[in-house]
Image (cartoon, rainbow, N blue to C red; front, side, top):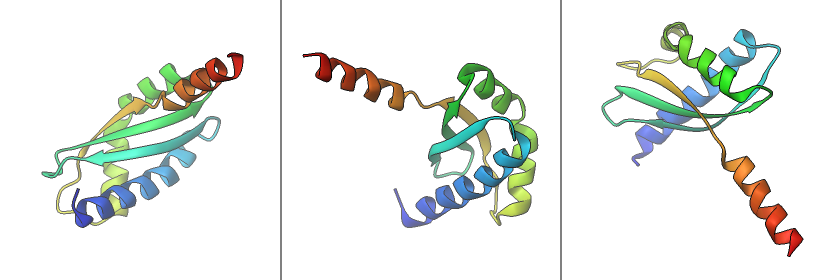
Length: 104
């Protein structure tokens, strides 16, 4: 991944974190990873949610257009990518592995 793309991912993560705190004050949402395609068409965002994860990710995807517009205002990009949110299940997988290791 190029340095420019890493910088864009970092800017998107920072700006979206701020927007998500404002849009979803009742839910703790953490952006764990941002992957933007090199052509800036799409941005895949992995989120970790404290609470109802499936409902929250669905709601994030439903509001992706408005979040994209807010993102376009907060960061200066030639083209603002379409946002796609996914649940990051890696934390749950780590917990399962840890439990299995501790039980043996």
